[in-house]
Length: 348
Image (cartoon, rainbow, N blue to C red; front, side, top):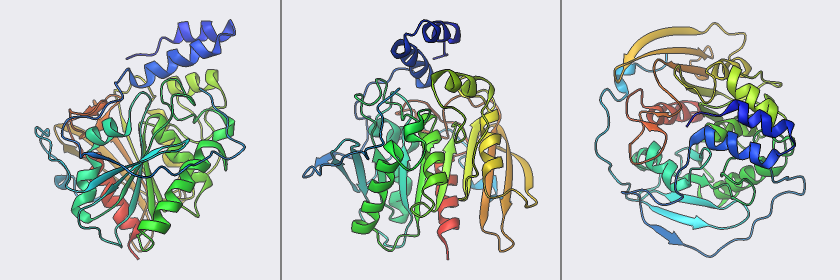
């Protein structure tokens, strides 16, 4: 769904900020029902654990050969065999527990986009299935409609852009799960799509003591917006990062994205720790698409920054499954490449 920029700006100028918020957020990822997608693991309720946002919270709107990625569209869903638990609180989340956990596997946090639910996002990305194969746990935080009418993470609000608000709450969830379930994990790694990608970049920037690496798909750089009008501007023309991202980061973006400008991907990559190194650039084909991968790494070969520019991809998860929203079945397989990146970063 395209953003009606003229209508949104008209509402902003007339002081109708709530209505302007709805216009931009509906345009960011369309309208998706908050229901479990077919083929997903069954939900299991557990004893709720109350969780409060910090007081500062405000409620408001080369790489490995591409031959290893998916070359054909995925046509059938293969449910994971682990368990998906529901945890409640002001920032609820689902915790995917693999059937055969590997205590040293990376712990993964997945942040959905606007209008999506954890179940919908899980269906489109198939991250639970990928994590199952290596015995990894996956955390799926859920934005509340009381905090944002369309379920967007409030990445454009100053109160959520640093060590407070939603960023602090998600960071606390990740640290708690790691302490209880995966104390020996090969790091905590956070990934997100669109608004979730923007929030993932915030977490990697301001919580390097918690997270080990970041994956941003179709997102925006930290500090590229401070309110709704500047969010429109960054989404439309590209934003500039106001601070460095100190953690290894892998970035995916489609050249045909009409919701979040592809220029944002370059801004995120430039803010990453690969600055000052000599990156390697390669062009290949995956899933019928031309892909340009720019990778910067340490002298020992550990990844610092990877930028995946995907020709013809719109505002959707690359290599995703059709059972979820905003998921494109053509390659490259973003889920597989992110998991590979997390494992490389977490390797001692």
